[in-house]
Image 1: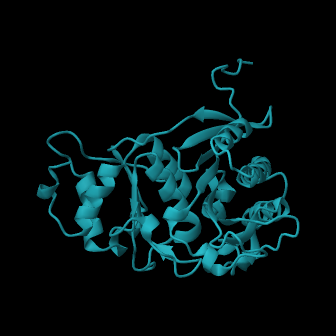
Image 2 (image 1 turned 90 degrees about the vertical axis):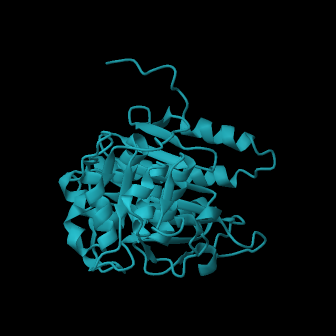
Image 3 (image 1 turned 30 degrees about the vertical axis):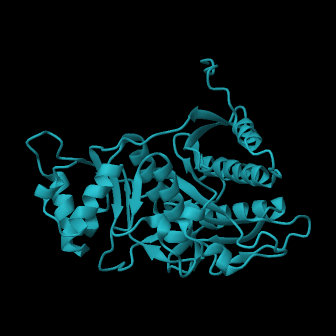
Length: 347
């Protein structure tokens, strides 16, 4: 068995403690919250690994608020995160893709200061065929830090730029945790033999421009003409060799964004005739991914404005999403504004 690389022996617990030391007035509640989240992720990772052996594959008899059939692993992951965070006592209110309404948390043991929004398991259509899936989360401070008891809907309807942390876990060939607290993007890989997340990529940066694009080409004829023109442009050979771009698509949004984060390029999920407001959920999917990609030097927008500047109107609000390398997303935005490729030479 190969030895573990000795230059990467920083556990996530050690890293969180180091970050806490940068804030002498820290109470430890935020660090405790992150510990609770990573514990929940370890539990989900364990059961994803055993899917097919533990009767957790397949669908339930219920549908969620989006009209999607709830899969067993969706429901299980939601319960794991919800119960872990409630027991931790640092969250005053939560929102989840699998919950119709907010989940107020009345902590009797502590004065909870934080708010959690999460998608317990992104990529439901891939669960039963062993393709990468993931969990996404956003953390905010409650609006009134002196308030006691459960949080409110307004605590969850904050624009993304107010996030104090965001992250996602990927359950693929290995379990990876990517998160930011506003000081760069850190990547941890789970070693099940040690039961530890180890730092494997510190201060990850996305290339300013890439050679890949990711989207559901099956929706091509349901898109606006300007979106189709942009995608056609990416597929067209250019004299300078920058195009065509390669198409990559997993159909698990968080996995497609993870690849884009490493290799550069753009992931796009535009509005279409069946999803006029877009398909990504702003509060517990798009905001978290936007914070991470921006912290890595990228860009995320709805085609018009920065994702993190949108003020949510409800916890299940949908949004178009164009996210990835800064120059690629800016180029896409120009197309959406009706500009001709000849005006893109500045890139």
